[in-house]
Each structure stands twice: as C-alpha cells, then as structure tokens.
Image (tube, rainbow, N blue to C red; front, top):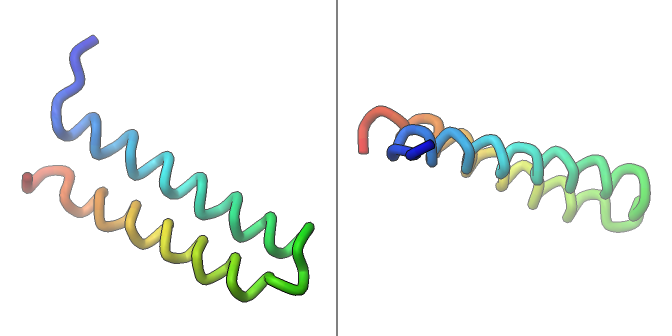
Length: 59
C-alpha cells in the first residue's frame, strides 16, 4: 500500500486530532489544576490537524 501526499496528510490530521482530544480530556479528568494549559495545547493540536486537512488537495 503506497501512500501518496493526500493519504499522509489524512493520517497526520487524524493523529493530531486524536492527540488534541486526548490532551483536553486528560486535562479535564486527571490534571484539573492545569486544565487550561492542557486545553490550549489540545486546541492547538486540533488546529494543526485542521490545517493539514485544508492542505490535503493543494500541496
């Protein structure tokens, strides 16, 4: 299975979105005193994944 650029961008955006969601949930459930920081970093990961999705057909 050979991956082209679009496939790599799809997998990377999926992984980044999953990591972002995990960070947000981890901040809310386990580290409540640092929930704001975990949420900002998680939102950042989700935004980068969204940018990869936008780049999927253009690069």
